Amino acid sequence: MAAVILRENYDQLLHNLLEQVLLLGSMVEDNVHCSVNAFIQRNHHVARRVAELDQNINDKRYAIEDTCVTLIVTQQPMARDARFIIAVLEISTELERMGDYAKGIAKITQLMGENPVDATLLAALQQMEEIGLQMLRRSLDAFYHRDIKVAREIPSVDDRVDRLYYRIYNHLANSMIYNQTSVENANYVLWAAHNLERLADRVANICERTVYMETGELLELATNEDIA
Amino acid sequence: MQQRSYYETVTVHNYKEVRMLTSTASLILNNHVQETTTINPSFAMQARDLSVYYGNFRAVKEVNLSIESQKITAIIGPSGCGKSTVIRTFNRMNELVPTARTEGEVYFMGNNIYAPNIDPVEVRRRIGMVFQKPNPFPRSIFENVAWGARINGFKEGIGQPSMQEWVEQCLRKAALWDEVYDKLDQSGLSLSGGQQQRLCIARAIAVKPEVILMDEPASALDPIATLKIEELMHELAAEYTIIVVTHNMQQAARVSDYTAFFSMDEDRAGILVEYDLTKKIFTNPHDPRTEGYITGRYG
Image (cartoon, rainbow over all chains, first blue to last red; front, side, top):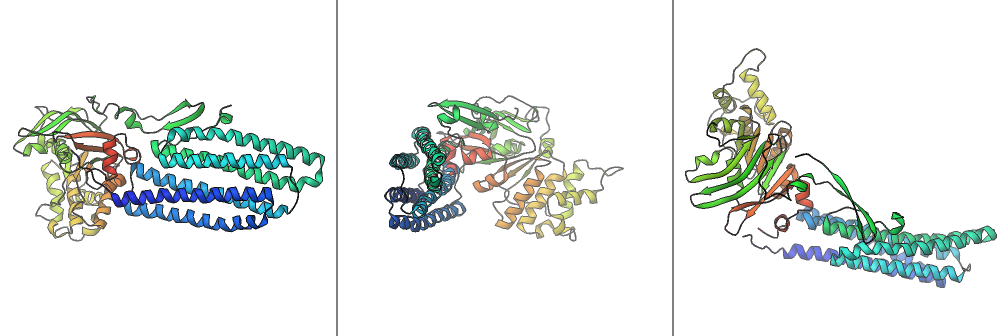
């Protein structure tokens, strides 16, 4: 019978990598939350801070990538281990892009100055943020626990984010038709909404990588909207 | 067995997933790895219910395996699982072991090589072997290649290469000609380990085999010589079927098209656990024992 060999050091390295991904996710979550709050409250100080902290997110992403490369060349990972490291590379890229969305919203806050925004639009943006971040938390949790059942379910929630985006879009489109002086402002708000909508899309990519890591299958987790 | 890939569209929780499953061998082989092989002459070699005994000890148990022609198949597994025993049955080399006994069948292009009317010497000409330790004859480099061809009926003539030309062709195929062309009369034993091994490959090629069995051909060589042997295997696969036993999983992953993973049963008999495209074995093996072995968690 085959003897069980414990690769404690190697397993610890893999676990450390996993924790770094969760840490990166936490950093992104914080920055997204702060960026939307800064937009709603017109807090330019916080917005500046979000833009600065994005560099930390980038640095963490590159550190994770470096760790992955080191593991590949020194440990020659196979099968599940290899799929895990590849998934980490993809997920860290997705998280870094989400960090860029937060930075984008922070910049929009600074560009908008003190221009007013309809309260219903702000409420919709906040809802998009809450749903998107909840999706992100659940997706990283599913990644950590290798829970493909949950990973497959999460992308469906993206529909709610999309509906909120289109509600904002329609509202802004109408306002631009009847009040051309509001066009610049509307563009900024639309761009912030677009960033939050794209954030939710990227969560779906994270879920796909979780499924790949666990099953080896590369597939696209479609939403109801894609099927319809 | 026909190669095919297919798409599977499934509905999971109301969401559409389109999956492309590209592992062809596993569709058939992994579902039926323990089922008896169906003999098909398009395969270079096939084992059907193959068991090998040394005295009363069963070293290999009921192997069913089909080797694709003109591909490289790696055989991996822990020590003592019967890898070398299996490939020695593929050219009847096991018969040289006094206590060895084979049950089941081994087919070469649809022909049972253990049938009573089959000449084992002819089997070993067409299914050549390269061993772990390079073992050139204590003769000149030229004679190492020419001797086998000569005793197997090599004849010069119109439209046929001369022996000189044939030796050069074989040494070129073995990626050795450029290093020895000006010293063909020197002893084969004067070469480095890596060169000796390539000389042994040239010797095997010289008798025009269809299959080349390699039992850990690079394990005694330095890393550079190892890589040269691996490059050579890629080139040879265009013309020959290659079956290589290796302890080096990374080597198996680098060189082979297909990989067969052997392990040991409770009674310490070697068994075939999984056989599939190399890419599948090393990215997403079907059997947890395979996964355990290739990730280094079982040995």
